[in-house]
Length: 384
Ligand code: EPS
Image (tube, rainbow, N blue to C red; front, side, top):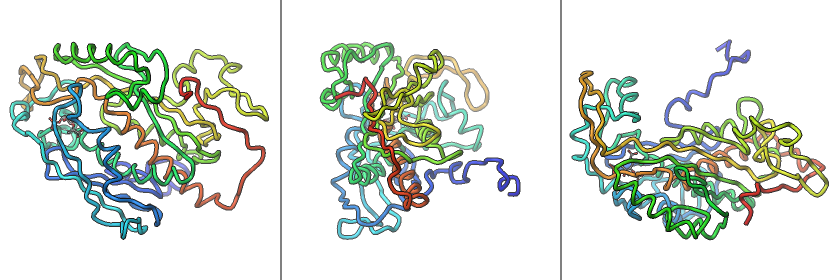
């Protein structure tokens, strides 16, 4: 304790378990093939209008079973509001949301229940707990992300009332990059892809990939517009630090960049610095965050997803007794989990921003607007 008080940082204990956030705290629970998944959203201000229908849009953007390019599992993903909402408004008490699992097919996992899929959390869950729920990957399944998206529907509403919007797109799939950026195209194809004329190419790419039995990685970029300067805390509660942790907590994520991210390595300071003028910032290499605190520019984060590890291509691996066995994963899987990940990254961005906004209000709510206020600038690729 003393060490903690004099500055040796330890993450808050809840971050080790199933909860994240400080003033807005999200706890999720449930397994992919259990009876239900759910979340508790605590610390949410009262007076936000919310109804069960409000969840449908974002949950359907994230859901499986919508096209041939994602897992064929069909879940209705209907949200039940169990607490924290009265007569259509949040009451300030914990909001509990529940979604029942209705299309789990556990027999698909019988053959690999005692095996470790290479590249999957099967092995690390087993080493950590000495026991695991192999049905659909149990708690390690991307099914858990449903509840983050549900919780973030409320966060997005609250942020929108303050002029903050959160959006995202698929910015790379395998080696393919978008040729242009058109927001209308993003929401009009199952790929969240910003260039409509490439969609046919993506369809054939994904068809060939699915037929081959292999998988591929992807990159998702998310942006938040309208964030005022000042959100984010020094030193351990940096906005970019918490965004990175939030994105890295999504299944299959292997990298997060803020602004220019790793491209900054090859840049000169004279290029990277975002010059301020009375008319506005001249660039946004920093991704809208300096010193862990928002600048008032667009917040930009991009997230790398690894190729899915559940493959029907046979591979030699180990079982729980350490024997070499042939591993083949059957069942319904995503050949590219990044295709459904845009709403999940948006959700994590929205939840982190709302939490940071509440924390900023708690400590600095009396500070008011500080001059000069420099108009923000969007990242070039995110122009509308
Ligand atoms: C997943 C494997 C599949 C996906 C699942 C994520 O599970 P199952 O074999 O039970 O169908 O369908 O995705 C979802 C159910 C979802 O809602 O996202 C995995 O291994 O992560």
